[in-house]
Image (cartoon, rainbow, N blue to C red; front, side):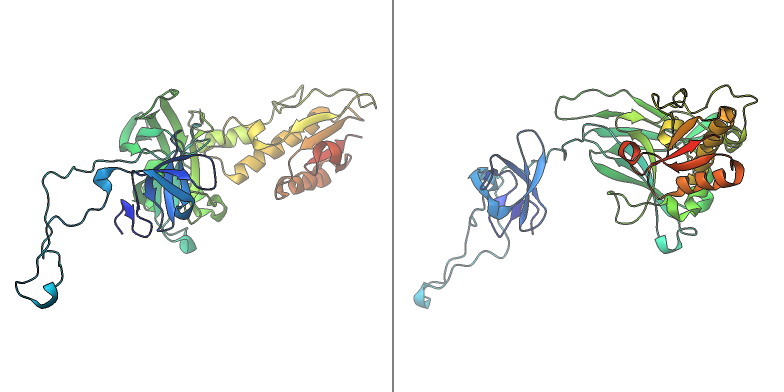
Length: 377
C-alpha cells in the first residue's frame, strides 16, 4: 500500500478530519494499518484513531486520485465499440505538483520532560554473557537530541559517535563485543535538545560523565524489560526526569574504599535524611532512617545491586553502633517492600551481630509493610 493513502477508506495523508464519536479533529499524518490512521491535533500531538471513527472535512486537491490523462480508444469498426484500456506506460504530467509534505515530529503528552538513556541489548539473550551487544541512544522526550559521545582514556578522549536522535526515538550506535567494552568504561555525552518547528522551553546543554561497569554485562538481573525494546536491555540513565545524572567518574578502588571505610567515632547516625533521635517516650516518636538507595547515594550510575546493598547495610550498622549505649532508643529503618532482599539482610545482621536488640515490623498504618522497628536494650 502506498504510504500516503489508505485504499480501503480513500483517506490520505494531509486530509483534515474530525472525530465521529468525540470532540476534536486534526490532520492525517500517517497510517499504522489499513484500519488505524495517525491524526495530529491542533496541539501537535499525534493520536492513533480507527478510520471508521473519522470524517473527512477537507482534502488537498493535488492528493486526490485522478483518472489517467490519456486512455486507449477502441479500434475503428470494432463490435460494441470495444473497452477503454489504460496505456501500457503511465503518462506523467510535468505540471503535477511535487508532494513535499513531511509529518511533524511525533510528540506525546508528558514528553516535554527530558529522559535520555544509553541502552545495551544482547544479540542473543539466551547466551547474553557471551553474546555481542547492540548499543543505542534512547531519546525519550519531545525534543530532538544533537549529541556527541566521547570515550576517555587517562587525560585524553576519543570521539565514538555523533548524530541526532529525533523525538521519542532510539538510535543504533554499533555492535560491541565484550572485548570492546573496555573502551566504553568512561564516557561523556554532550549535546543540546531543541524543537525544530515550534517554540520550546530551552534546556541547558548536556555534559554528562558516565561510568559503564563491564561486570554488569555478565549479570542476568542487570538486563530488565523496558518500553523501548521487545527484549530485556541494560539501561544507563544520562538524563532522568529532566535532570542530568551526576557528572562524576568513580573508580572501583574508590568505591570499595567508600563502602568499607568505617568512621572512628561517629557522633551521630550517617544517613543524610535520618532524623535526630528523641527520647523514646510515648510523647515522642522513634528515629527514622530511610535506607532507600536514592536517599543515601547521589547517583546510582555504575553501581551494581551488590554495591548498593553493601552500602545500605553499612548505613544500618553505623546507625546502630552510634546508638548502642542509648538504651531504650527506637529506630525505624525504612527499606520498602520490594522483593524483601534488604529486609532479609537486615534481620540476618540483627540476629548475628546485634542479638541484644529487639526488632519487629513497624506500624502498618504509618509505614505499610516497608519498615522495621529496632529497639536498643
